[in-house]
View 1 (cartoon, rainbow, N blue to C red):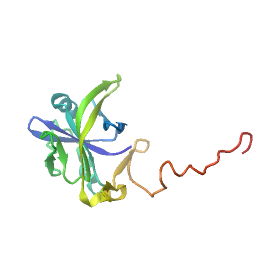
View 2: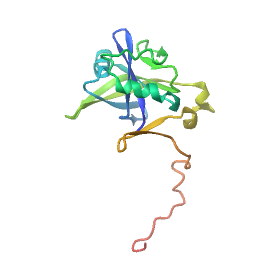
View 3: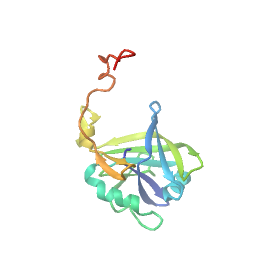
View 4: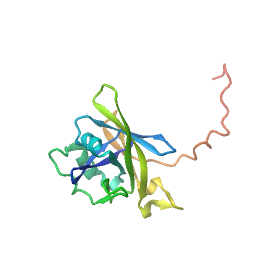
Length: 180
């Protein structure tokens, strides 16, 4: 799962928390879903303001990012760990050191009876570090994102390039029935 840092505004102070429950739910308009434990301060912040950010950290940010997931914003001010900038809405904190940031406006929230709340936000603006762009597009190797494996409770970095999507299987021939 992708490791991301959620940015919210707690009154006048930015708050950040690390999660791995995040994914795209719509391409046009662009929407992203995050799930947060109900006990997180970020849940209240999103409900109060209607905004959040999704910050994709690079591998070199991992120690600070892990710290943000360990400590609660209710008792720890995490706004000083990285430099903050505000998006075009003016109230959505994002991490300057993160190579990719998405400013989101809350569209909907869902509770499924478990420990988490799922928030869906429309991406109103995306910011990408110039150093991570190739031909005007974000480059995953330059971003150097981190993934999380829930099965071994470990962080992993991105591996090798395997080929172009919707291209690798063009010449594939499925095995005929009855053959091994």
